[in-house]
Length: 103
Length: 318
Image (tube, rainbow over all chains, first blue to last red; front, side):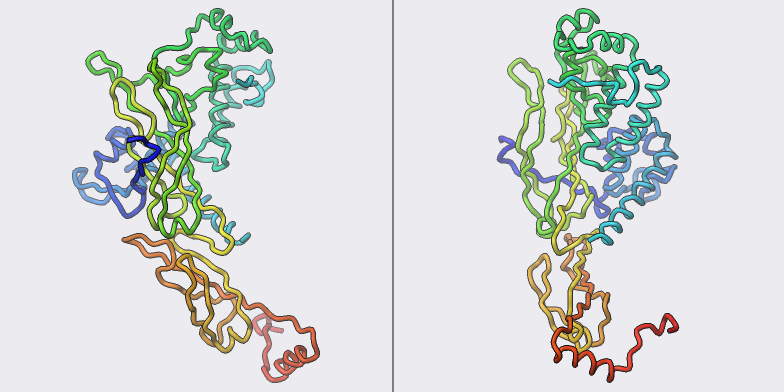
């Protein structure tokens, strides 16, 4: 069917829905070892005991992709990415507070 | 096609050393990286910066670009001069990594030049295949649409293959369902709607980042909708039932007696809710004082002053 008439429905990358280890690797185009390193760095945090049971919130997809881009484009290492993500989250919170006080 | 001054883009002199060029590139790349910089033009600037560096970091490309000067439109001759070959069978357009170069660049160096890093594809059985790149787009919607869910029509530059098998970017309309209760900054993944794969590999995905257009009344903070509600002093003091706008239409809100300015009242479920998470509306009371202009109006305030025995500055110790 022509895309102009088709209504596309996507998946919201939220905290409510989860994906498996394999799905996370596939969607992000990342290797298992890269994802394991991000877990070790605390960038993403799966629920579950073993890798077979791991569930990642869909927000993890965005975090992994951001880390992949920062690593590739700016040559930031993993601890640097973890720090950058925390600072970006903080910046978002500050911006929202700023909107609050100016509105 | 527009001439690009790569030196100006990187903010360096025409005789800048390779070391200076590298420093300028790294500094600007950090500043304008689309994951870090939320400005609307950040992605375009980031691409320009990468393109400029691609040329200026390479002595051969840089000297060719320098020689070209203002005669840049003579691109055919230029390509012969540098031994580059344009118009290869495959064309990459990537939304990330700065590998999506301008028409100007492609006219000078050919389409496949500088895309070496994009060739890390999978060679299965000698056949070249590469998953399509993901695309990212920001979508601005109204709070009303976020509350109810909505259909959004987007016009995006999307890859279209022509009769010769050459892929070019053309504007196309996409209709996307934005589900009820989406929160600002959330992303929606549309599987397989990114750039097409090469050699039979699957297409990339399209990611929509949702932003809210400013609203004259409401402000969203995650799932919570905030509204400042002006009230008269007697409504705050005596209590009242007032009509309040919500994203779900008007509702009646009971203001308890002796409410102070700034008191917050919760309207359950009137925020951005999904099937799993409920959002509320928080109404913050703003007591607005009527001005006393006539003798009668002033008499009311005077009578209050006499009868209320009220010092608003007790906390200041005065």
